[in-house]
Each structure stands twice: as C-alpha cells, then as structure tokens.
Image 1: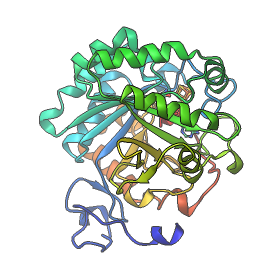
Image 2: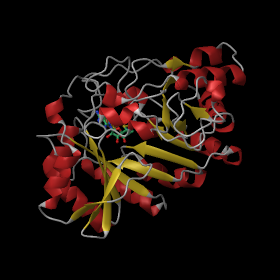
Image 3: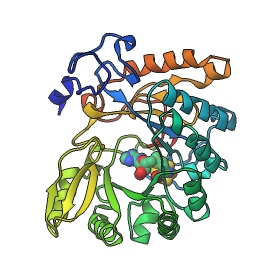
Length: 354
Ligand code: SAM
Ligand code: SF4
C-alpha cells in the first residue's frame, strides 16, 4: 500500500495540471486542497466531547470532560462553517462528537447550517449513537438534516453492553426506527474487534438486509482513549469478507469516492467496509475535521492540529482565518499508510469525532 501513496492523488480541481503538485496554497485554483492535490469537500464537525456511552474502542476509562468555555458556541460553529462553505468550497458537513445529540442546541445548529445551502452547502449529515433519536429525529429532519449514520456494533444485548461500557441496545434500535420514521436515510456503522464482536458480523448483515439498510463495517483504528488498540484486535476487511463468504456470495463492487469499499451480497444487497488499517484510502481523502474546541485536523491521525478558536475569539477576520485553514490543510500528511500504528496525538476519537 505504501507505494500507492507516493503518487499524488488525481486532483479534481486543485492543481493546474493533473498529477502535478502545486507548490503553495496560492497555486491551487480554488477551494481547499493539500500539496498532494487532494481537494477537500467534506468537513467533520465535532459538537462535543461528551457522550452517554463508554465504547471500549473510543472513550478513556474515566473521561475528563473539557471545560464548557473551551467548546465552541453555536455562533462560532456557524461562523466557521460558513467560512468553510463560502470561501473554501466545502459542500458536505457531518456533525459528530462525542455524541452530537447531547448538545441541547443540536437542532438549532442544523437549522443554522441549513441557511448555508445558497452558499454551496449540499449535505448536512450526522453520526450518532442513536439513543436520543426518538426525541429529536423529526425536529432534525425538519431543520434540514439530510441523513444519519448510526453506530451499532452488535445486535446481541450482552455484546452491545460489553462494547459500549454498559449501554443498552434497545434505545439504539428505537433510535434507528425513529430516524427512519422521520424520513431520514440511515446507514449503520459497526466497528469490528477480534475476540469481541466478529461473531456479530453475519447477524448484523442479515438484519440490515432484512431492514433494507446499508451497513458499513469499520476496522478498529488506533484512536481509542485507553490504549486498547493493538494490531491483533483488528478484524480486517479480508477476514470480514471471508467470514461472510461462508454463507453468501460476496462480490466486490467498483470503488467510489466513499471511504468504504462496497460489496454485493448474493447479487442484490450491498454493504461496505471501511478498511483504514488494512487498505487505507488516504490517497483519495477529501475531508478535514474540526474538534469541538475549534482545532482543525487535516487527518484523523494527525499528531497536531491548528487552533482556530483562540484567533477567532481574539478578533481575527474571515480572511485571516481562511488563510490559516488553507495553510494548515496544505501540509496535510500522506496518511495512515505511511505511518501505521499508534500515533502520539493530543486527542482521541471522542474529542475529534469519527
Ligand atoms: N457518538 C457517535 C457515534 O458513536 O456514532 C459519533 C462519534 S463516534 C467517535 C463516530 C464513529 O467513530 C462511530 O461510528 C464509532 O463507531 C467510530 N469509532 C470510534 N472509535 C473508533 C475506533 N477506535 N476505530 C474505528 N472506529 C471508531
Ligand atoms: Fe460515544 Fe460514539 Fe465514542 Fe461510543 S463511539 S463512546 S458512542 S463517541
């Protein structure tokens, strides 16, 4: 995989000639791009570090929540989102966390983002653990949410509880039903960890097929808050496919821009695998991430981010912030494949958002 990363990604609009690296952010034609020609269209926006679950692959054992003053306020989130859309060409915003639905103003945030559509925003999405959806799914849909990914790593109550540090599967299933009743397209995310829930892969797939929902398995990434990850615990794409092939005909579908690789089951249903560890897709990466504290990360595995909150609170204007963002993204690293394994990083998944 390393050799494929040495070649620049095919740029869609960032550099003057395909395959030629631009020399500085100002060489880029428009939008937000890095020196490897990868154009950024997607922003993952974390709304909070707080969560009602304690997934073993995500949260520290005893999380210390960030002081509220460090978390971006709604007006700050919307100001930055507007800048990303209007000045930097972001078309797709995904709200995440922590658990984004723990934020009391989450519906207002979606409604405010919805006003950015005339500026170029095409999609407002969310990733959630789903438990609070029965109360807010209708309001989120009415406010402008386009679709939602809901995490469900096991259908078996005991396995779900073990993986989520005490959570119950039932509210998540109710949340999935509520989202669908509200008219929200739903995808299911399932992290697969060896010796934890690989036996859930087949039942999850059959359940998703039955319910006509897209399921995406996710390889366990070294981003957890308690040092739980090790390479042996990664149940890889090839292993997932092999396990399913014992029961179904599984065919790989052509690659798309989606981070998941898709497969067909018995020629009709479709599921995906996000194989960040065994088959990284860094060469096609079109996303950037902002933590709930307003720190920009060009990659999930970045060792350092760029603080936008302090300059914003100190009075920086939009042009200065846009310059700062372009400069940071320009230096985006090649990605996980070039530096696999644990990365010393200031924050973990629950703060940055997946
Ligand atoms: N709380 C929400 C949820 O669980 O969907 C949103 C935040 S969560 C950090 C976003 C996604 O990251 C979830 O699908 C979760 O399963 C995934 N995730 C968290 N830690 C991970 C890890 N170490 N490896 C792979 N995926 C992870
Ligand atoms: Fe919470 Fe989501 Fe992390 Fe689980 S994966 S602890 S639900 S933020």
